[in-house]
Image (cartoon, rainbow, N blue to C red):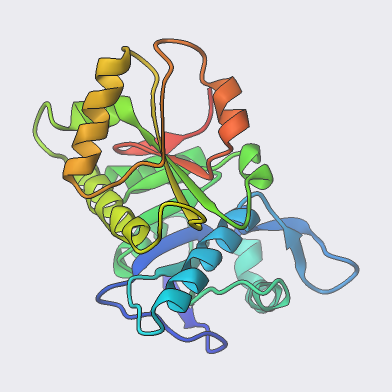
Length: 261
């Protein structure tokens, strides 16, 4: 059973042009109360939602009629949290988060809620949820504790260059199609801003191969309209140190992606 509540506190986005991003409520909020209030404290995905909101704000500053905006949906699958739906909604209001809709479902039906909401990117801290949604063709990213320390004023998205190169090597699966579609929209958003002081930063990283491998992935992204702000070729070196330095909010690949080592 899936229940969806529209947030009347925010202006709803244009369904034909908005980029729908779903985040699990357990990733956005912590389990404890905040400052003695009857609201949840912030979780690992909180800076990410602030960064998405900042991109929207800057897009509307550039063009008040802009329709290519992030449309955030909060997904709840935990039965205890569903019983406290009013607290989740009030927590969103308390923390000033621009969430368009709240979806409540059980663990068996949450993928259905993603598909019904036309979600283009699903973010969660639960590996099983990420796997299930990815298998159904929903681009999914696995968040971890690093996300809590990411910047809130700039959305930092990292592409896995190795996966980008593999995408052109065989048949295009549903998850790869979703990844390519989302990356094209992201690239279009990035084009709305200048070279400097952009609220959206796109990073390319290749873990294997040398400069040629990185260059090939860069050309592939450019052919899809995705401009890259930073590019790194690790040539087999551990990626942990550079991830901790660059602090991307999430890593984009084909299918299931995440920042774990």
